[in-house]
Length: 281
Ligand SMILES: [Zn+2]
Image 1 (cartoon, rainbow, N blue to C red):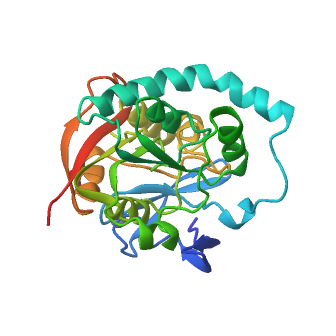
Image 2: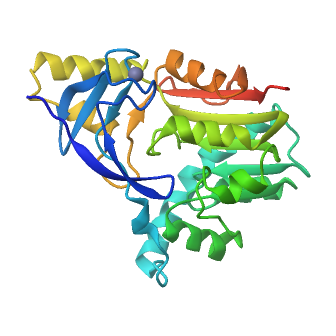
Image 3: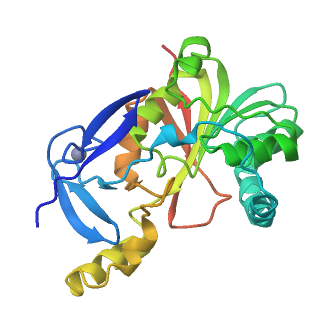
């Protein structure tokens, strides 16, 4: 069955139609459906072998209209904080191995409830954050007194006034969630000062679990897409793409930064965790 799903996508603040045969990584018209999953199809590119699903977030749905932070939502977000806190303390250790954050301008893209910018602030950094989901921005303001921006990184708000402004930009578990990862990364790198740092982590397609998931799908001839379904999600802000090390390396190095290290604080083999330095012109 050939799927040519055309979705209405919001890109660069204008409505456009996205054809998923056009690879989200290399831009060539060589992607086709490889796996049919629950409520989504997984495309693979014949040219660069990038994997992504045929789902995009409708970012217009996130227009502020009154408070969304109910008592129930607040309790739920609070319940996730201890575990996220452990993860973000490791992320902070990783950052501090390269940069002393005090006095530095830092931007956390996809900051969720604001935990990481608040940790940065405690070190004396000047921390900003971007989060498309209003409910998390409200939580961050209430809990950490941190005002988080809703403007996405490719918005002219950032691109016009903050070019080469930040010492540190972080993308923790973000690149797999965004609609267009190449555009996100390119826009993020533009905001880093020459010699400044980019830190990011994202799931790895080289992981044993990913390979097992593909085998399980093939062996069952598609009747058991269970494992692959757990790696991707058609839900809003779910996982839309997963990079191999080679794909991520090529992407960041084409965005004007150079990989200078990998984390020794994160022991998970299912993740790519890297630090890059912005090239000097
Ligand atoms: Zn491609």
